[in-house]
Amino acid sequence: MSVLFLDFESSERTARVQKLSRTGAHIVASEPRWPAFFELAKREKPYAIAIDFAQAPSHSLETADYLAKAKETRDAAIYLLRVPEDRVDIVAKRLPRATRVTDQELAARVVEAEKQAQERARQKKEAAAQARKNARAKVNAGDKTAGPARPPAPAREGKAAAVAKIPARATKPAGKVEKKPASPKGSKKKAAPSKAASRPARKR
Image (cartoon, rainbow, N blue to C red):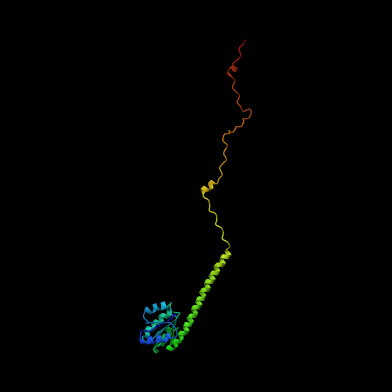
């Protein structure tokens, strides 16, 4: 966690950053030049941003307005230093969430903002741990209600295997000749009379 201090480089900026560092906060100083200040803000993820208007009020106003609306930095507390009197109204209109402070007030605000940031980080960590715990409990409950796993269904047999299981037809034993049934009576044809019998007898 850090505090982003934006002002153009000068001996005054160096002295102010050193004084602010005595609060124990991690101060990262940079100039309000696009896109360097925004890339730094995305990397540092500051919980507070201090912008000094002393050297370039118009430029500082545009920088503050961009950071107040950007998704990556809109949740950070924004503090404005040395805002000229002729810019107070427009600053209040464009930056309703920003706070105008002195150097002494900034030091006190930074200490409080760091405590709040630490508390938010702790709550976020606890919420994530609770969510993981609930997910594990849900999975375990689902395993218990599902019961034992059913055995897999037997594989379907192929056509060749099914044919092989059909019993073969019984064959007749070799060497035995089946007897034909006897013909019914009267069905036999009468034998033709012999040639001798058909001749008439000689007279004596």
